[in-house]
Image (cartoon, rainbow, N blue to C red):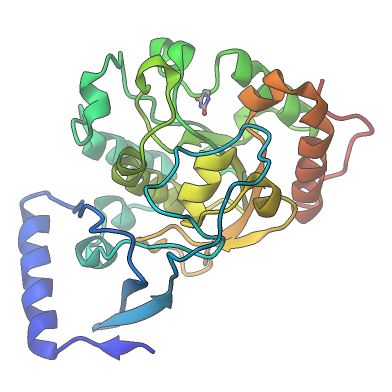
Length: 308
Ligand code: URA
């Protein structure tokens, strides 16, 4: 049940957040305490800060299912197939982001990039990254693809999905009857994890608020999460690829509201990561089904043939 914060506390929090904003600080992070049994979501409605408690269980459903090799790094305790902890982040939920007062999406994205700066918020900054890979594409795209994190080619070129997996993603986009330039492409983490390892949970949690802000600026109609890391981070839930694929989710970027009252989130679909499809091309047909579902949602005409 939603409960309202004590007015004194609300005023004190609002004052503190304004103070930080005046100093140019908009992002606040809090480490997860543990696997909780309760998730607390905080939002602002008009002047009120609303605290609502969400379902969460950390009990016992195992995720030991065949996953075709697409898994995030294992959690310390058993994971579940229900929404898991959305970390309490009161500051992030109520702080207005600087780009929200800007209507031009190109400028708004630039503001987010500047805010990111020469980011040193997680360990990836000192583990060999050459540059931050922010995101690329149409700033008003109807369709957005979100991958895991840059690899060596992306790290070298500063653009997501430009290596072998990127070539396949380009083919997938072409097969949908559109060009790469028409979509927006980004990753959960913006720095290359060393040796292309899977980004850690805390790295995803630290970096993804910037992606959420990018999403709120681009305001896509559909997001395609490429692989388990993207899907689980965006949906804040733990489940197998088998469970995650084949349906749409209603998605709103966590901790941020769009400045457009007509954009109240979008649909999100999950498909296999192109790097996984390169390792197991037999799954391309399944990925194509996912993309066809997306095309139908966007009213796109399906060409006869899928991605090669
Ligand atoms: N894999 C990803 O997840 N993202 C990239 O940008 C490249 C490869």
